[in-house]
Length: 203
Image 1 (cartoon, one colour):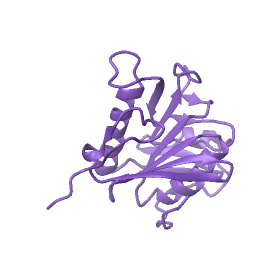
Image 2: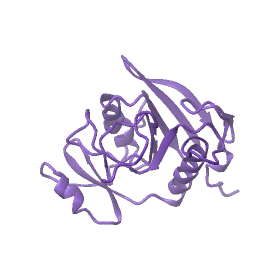
Image 3: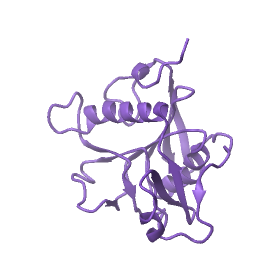
Image 4: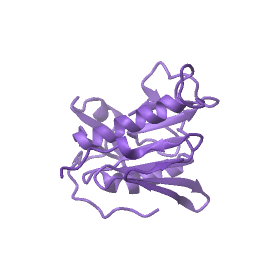
């Protein structure tokens, strides 16, 4: 998988081995994760990031994540920012922007906020502050957890990359950009119009 250049690290990180108790005590205005044994606190996303993540969740979720009244084939459980406690990354804890499970593997959300079954798809919306960790550390963690599909979306450059796992690692299988209409694996049963995913640039 091709990684973005390492960004300037604007995270707040603990200087001692972090525990889940550290994560639970994190400020409410931060997204808290345990990555590589560190407590990683990232700021709430910018408007551009939030727009892309929200529309991606609406589009994929409406087509695949609903049982009734779906605009597509359904069959998935699609969630925003689930807290992943899954084999392969433990004791780390990841919070992807979006994740999805095929309903034959996870049909209902757990009573607890912790998800212990690895997703079938994860999506990270990249920012200059988070791209390095999302692509490198978390990307390798998702691979170790057995996640078969990984999307990364760059809302600034307006493109989406699709990766599929195999025995060698992540294989880049698709790129869609700008205002393209594309069938994006594993959701290629429907066409996805990317034109509404981006904050329009000023003229």
